[in-house]
Image 1: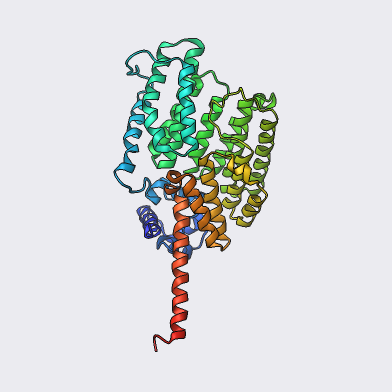
Image 2: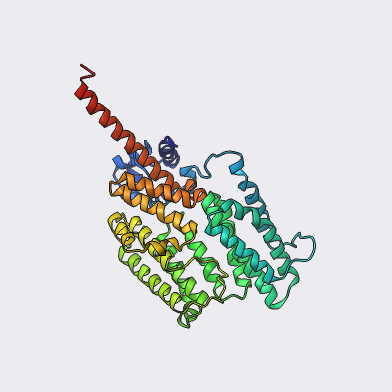
Length: 409
């Protein structure tokens, strides 16, 4: 892992040379100096912001995973998820063909119960386990849609769309861009057939995430706004599922704006999301099932506010927001969200010059969501930065002590 930054730099260099682009050309496109690009290509500068990584990949016309080497090399046991991913891809490719399913599919109400299991696995950041469950569920749900009519058929397509969302999330976390793209396309297709007025907006929420990979920040905001308009009436009426979707879309737009350098808009979007979260809490109905599996809450808004501050390189603001956020609010979040939060805090403390606190936060992140954190490029970048800094510090301490001992004399 210690050589990973150098290898990332080599991949950037190879992609740049393949296009006949000079370091100066890439620097101009990124708003950096030629010296910065040179250091980055030699592994001396970490790509420690997702927005920056995505922007470089976009300028070089490659996928971000091509630069960072995801999925990362691991043991055969840790690579078994790719077998499940291939099975999911097969089901998504044959989406409009007669399903291959033995027996009679269960009714929609029972299949919805299967999605609650997926929801728990997602909250625990158990992405490989999600992959294992999905192939059979895709087959059965598609079989139900084939034989059912009316509302039952619409519900089957709604379940199919939610399964696409789980596949999309897991594929992002594990590094499978082809599955990410196909899951997003199939989610949009099934959402239109679901009869659920909010589901198409959820599919757009997924698509916004995909636009980040190509640094299409303006398009991501435009799509978020279109999706917001599609659920505005339901939001105004206080429909619980529409409030969740509306707030989640505002958070997507906030991150998009932050990465696009639109600071005022990013902060304004966070305010909108915070208002939606407050409204959701005030009108909470325990009987309303979160069928879209959107983890929207006041705590989620706070950790997004911290992430947005970091994307704008405002680590002190991020740490200030964290100090104002109650510990209980963070602990109420699922492990997957807590893992992301502690990764962000590790970055904030590192940038603020406190490696000890950065390492403690990174350790918290790993304990909370190990699979997520070990596969996350920003967590790996943060750890590398800490290791390199500690090595440099140790070397300097030894040099000074050597001078005092006159070891070279």
